[in-house]
Length: 69
Image 1 (cartoon, rainbow, N blue to C red):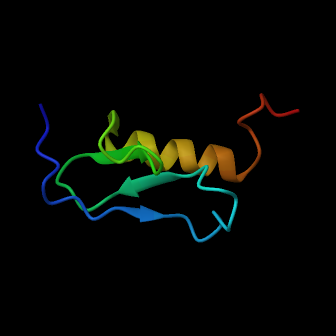
Image 2 (image 1 turned 60 degrees about the vertical axis):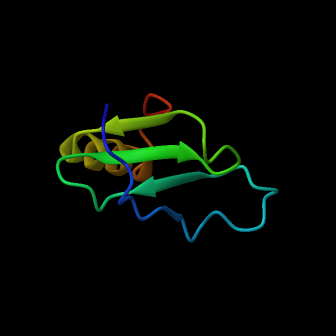
């Protein structure tokens, strides 16, 4: 199990006031990026290698998350 005790969680500045439907990301941990549901801060956490997270965010940012349509 990954030690997340030092995680510094942040929400996107684009989250806005949408009723809490957000994810929080901790990118300060060595070798991983952790992601969790902001409404369930004690629930499940997904972890990714930093390179995979960058690829994901880049892909979503350019609009390919829907298959490029």
